[in-house]
Structure formats: C-alpha cells, structure tokens
Image (cartoon, rainbow, N blue to C red; front, side, top):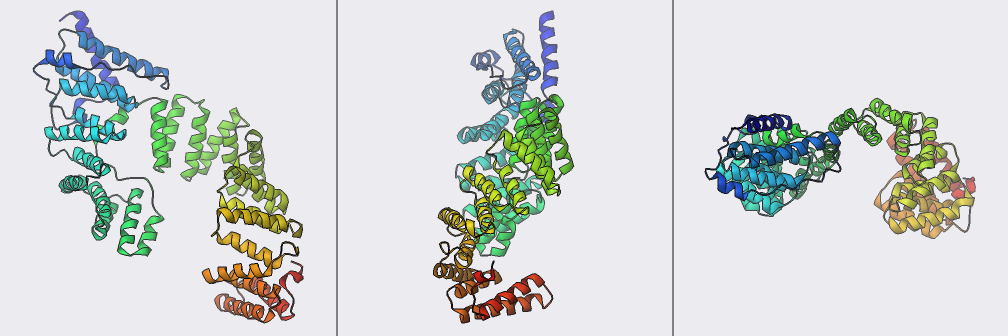
Length: 544
C-alpha cells in the first residue's frame, strides 16, 4: 500500500469520526461484511449527485464537499476494501440524510447496501428516508429487505406497519404490530398504531383499550387523544370523547431507535436546526423548538428571524421573560421590526401595560399597515377608552384582510352599537353582512335582535323581526340574556303583558340562582326593566 493510500485511509477515517458516530452505535444486529465479488459490485455503484448546497452555510458545505470528494477518491483506490468503501458511502449518506439532501443520501445508501449486503443499517435508513418523503412503495421494499436480514428487527417492523397503514393494507400492518406488541420496549408505540388500525376497522372497544394502553405508556403523546376521542364517540361515550378532543395534539409516541436518533448527532448548521425547529413547532413542542433556535443563534447571533422565532416559541412555552428578552434584542437592532413590535406588544398587553403595548402596535402598523393583530388590539384599547367609532374602524381592518374572522366582526358590531343611535344603521348593515358568512352565530343574531328591538333610530328598528330572532335564540339557549331580549321585543310591539311575564320569570330565575344579594347590578337592571314594562313603556324609552 502506498503512502498516499495510507494517508487517504487515515483521512477518511478522521472524516467519518467528524460526520457521525461509530458502527457500534448504529446496530447491534450485524457486522459489516463486504460482498465477495468486489469488482462486480464496484462496477454497479451509482454516481452520487453533488447536492445543491446553496441553503447550507459555508462551514457545513465545505465539510460535506470534502467528505464527498474523499469517497470518490477511495473508490478510485485499487487497494480499497469493500468494508471501508461501504462504510464510507453509508456515513456520507447519513450526513446527507441528516441535512435533508435526500437525493444524494439515497444513492449513498444504495451503494453502501451493495457493498455491505448483510448490513441492515443501509436498507433500513433508506426505508426511513423514503418514508419521510412519503414514497411508501419504495419504503416497503427497503423495510422488507431489512427484515430479510433480521426478521425480528422491531423498529423495521413498526415502521413497515406505519407504511402499510398508509397504503391501506390493514391486515398486513396488523400482523406486524401484533408481533411487536410482545416486545416490552415497544408495547406503547405498537398499541397506538394498533388502536388507530382498530378504529379504522370500526372496532371501537378494542381501539379504546389499545389507545388507553398507549396513553398510559406515553402520557405526553398528545396525538393519542384524537383517535381515542373518535373511538369513545364510536362507543357512544360523548363525555369521554369531548374530554380527549380538548387535549388533542401532534406529538406521537416515540419509537426507541438509536439508528435514526444518530442522524441528529450528524446534523449541524442553521438549515438543520431550522428543519428540526419547524417540526417541533408543528408538534407543539415549543421548548424543543426554542432550543433549536438557540442553536441557530449560537452559530449566527445576528439572525433576526431566529430571534423572533425564539421569542415566539418562548412565549408559547409560557416563558414571557425569555420572550420579551428575545424581542427586545431584535428591536435594539431594528426598532421598526413589525413582528417583534407586535409580539412584544402582546406580552405587554397581557401583563397589563396597555399604553406601552399600544405604542408597539402603532409601530407595527407603520411597517405593516394591514397587520390584523395590531389593528385588533388597538381597537380593544379604543373600546376601553370609549372611542367606539375609531375602535369599529380598526376591527373592520382585521376582517378586511381576513374575511372569515368572526371575532373581529362581532367586536365591530359591538363598537358600532355602543357608539349610539347615529351608528345603528351602519351596525345593522355590518351585522347583516356578517350573518351572510356566519348565519348561525348566536352573538351576531343576539346583537341584531337587540338592535331591532331597542334602537332609538326608527330606520334601524323592526320589532317583529327582533321578536322572531329573540324567540329563536331563547328556544336554542334558555338564558337570562335571551329571555330579556324576548321581553324587550314584546315591549317594543306594545305587548306589555307578555313582556312583563318574561321579565318577571327572568327576575325570579336570577333571584333563585344568585340569591337576593348576588350580582346586584344584574338584579337592579332586571327590576328596572320590569318597572319600565309595567309602566307600558318600551325599553328604548329608558334613554338607553
């Protein structure tokens, strides 16, 4: 062996240490054994495409390029062994996979498998790569080859079952999951998959049993709640279904898998941390996402976007001080940054510092005049100050950008109603427009019923329609507020005996529920309105 060859072997060994962990950490099931017909195998190796590195930072890019070049050099060495070259291809594939350079990773895994046909790592990781890419048919073949080498490989059985479920091959998936269920370490994960399978088959009792077992094994796996809720609903247990629906999330039980977990150890650079952060946010693991953004900032403290994302994740993980610190760092560098101003404003608003919050919302709107969130909180601030017409204007800006937004339409209507009779016709128009989009919304219907029965503006008033709306609301939800609306409508139509009957019943209910000294403002209002109707006056004549 030449000095150059020895140097190359040592260099590739050093590079392999840089890009990953040792073979022993990858698998305990097999040892790398090269194919005896190395020359034939070498001729069948596929050329590895050079990845598109444009989104990867320079240090990582240069490292991967060097590792790629060394593998090519090794392949050209006439004295190379299949084991050394197979390991080199496999490790390079893992590095590409960890950085989501999938096309290059796939070819590396194929070459590694050809050179080391008895090593389960390479078909297994190829299957995992195809599963991530939702290339399910390819993943099936990869996992089948893995199981041909090691029939009891639990991770491959579990992941193959997941793929088969995605292909609607339920019976094949069930057989695999039942095998894995006997392995204590994997019982919870297998129960989760089996429970979902039983739900798809309509076997709700078994689904509840299995998903409950999965939840007991993985109480932090919020993704269990939705199928468990559906299974309870299938049994007719609506209360249990609602309980679990409220807790639904995206975090699935984790498969114990050192081979896959080792990929994380290979990843480095901002792009990889960004990928993991986005996945963590999607799974609502905001603490984990925050740590990924912290890793990005350790590499590049000037990354404004990462500071904003870190602040948002800290906010969502109930760390207001950490969130505030992140947003203030952004504003030190870019005082007019719209997102940092908005989120810092949100924090200050929730802490009761509303004037300071409004200042940040106004800055947000200078940079982004259509920012719905800033308009909404500015409108709420104006409502509290009694500036109702201005508040209505800003609520309108919210649904101007988000036409389906219900809350901003409700709040705009409330502001217009509070602005007085001069704005009631406009309120009627806005409520009517909103009901076209949200015809069943009780708040909008209640606002319209009150407007039609109590407005001092005769053009906005329509007692008959108001009564119809009020009775419909009362029939749906027998509440004090709806009973009051019915009484108001009857009084507007001059049917004072009916108004008195509803108002008296409402007062009696409130006294029974709250007692004579509870909710004094409510009781006083009910008594005052009863006196008004007893004097045969409509509600609007009270001057309200």
